[in-house]
Image (tube, one colour):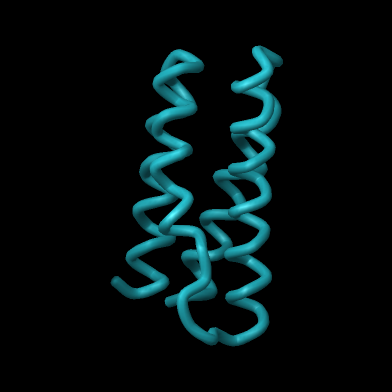
Length: 89
């Protein structure tokens, strides 16, 4: 799977999970970890965008796991995934 395909899947999943209950969203986010891990050398900009998406997803996951509000965390994560997708293309 290419980086563009991975980023597209992550973006889709984030948009869908944003509207789910915390347990469902957390399960979805846990399923994304394999997609956001680097598995080959990419240009620095792509790697930075991928890692930003990964960190944003982790922040949402931590908030959901702790029962904290995550509403303000979704937009930055989606934006990071969109940036990753645009740079990976």
